[in-house]
Length: 380
Image 1 (cartoon, helix red, strand yellow):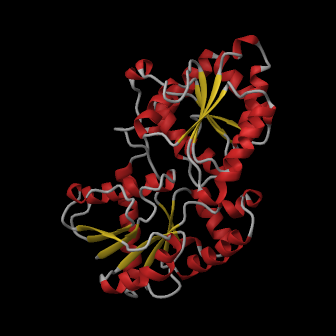
Image 2 (spheres, one colour):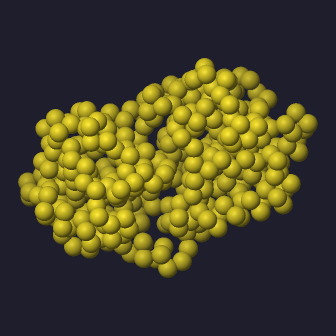
Image 3 (cartoon, one colour):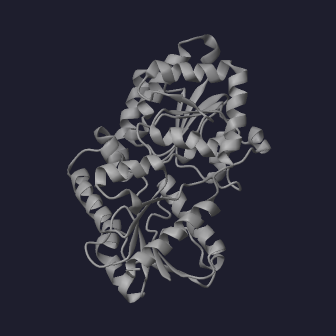
């Protein structure tokens, strides 16, 4: 097969989706010596041709607008590069691309619509549903996400395949050097609670900030804690939300206790996760949830939302909470800080749980989806 992968998102610091693509491309290059690949990127991509086998070709597209790339340009490259299968992100081109694997990590604009408003969301809803209908196969990350895709896009369940995601053990691990790491470039930090992820409304960071304020009010032993918020913004949802969060911090008089770092390199993120007293993931909607697994791999206790994807991924290795219950989130943080037996249990279970997910296994499942799409495309 000749397989094309739409990887326009590489180099754009877009969180879990970018991590997924980068890792599966690396792993496909290791496990697949039968097929040829063309990886479509723009000039900001982070791949290196010399680190890929000769069966992999990096093709830099001449335009940077992702909608133009996906909707209008890919049909031409599908034909000119003689592809058998093309793997696209969320949306298919308006024409062509007969045999396709559509990557749908979540449908959060449907499961959590209050976080996504405006005409752009309506257009996405129409385009994504149409793409799901036209695709040969759909790849997603969890059973929870698969159920949402079937429900909201009206596609048959046997069209949607679960590949999962994973943690890179060479990036996220228990790092003894974390205690010597200097955080001066971000802020002066001692004990802190950590959030890691894109600054999007559906990540529910506003509830975490309110819960952190409640925690500090519960006793002087919590007053020295800081809340560190690591992550950049997504263009269409992030800018206004960041300002809203900063206003909330000022309103709660937490300006010297809440640190926004913006995007940080992987090594620094590992250090943050190793040094944190806990990592809190209070999302209102997720398709998978990589930060909980990454924190677990670093030997750090995790508090996560009691939502289907988090329940599926964490599987008893995290303390689950109602994400809209401010007092409940504050209470869970207090438990982790004061109950040493609970904290140790979360660390132990988390290390075991994170080790169950590998990128090689994810890539192998995705390769099976490519093969299925190819056979379906041939009508066999």
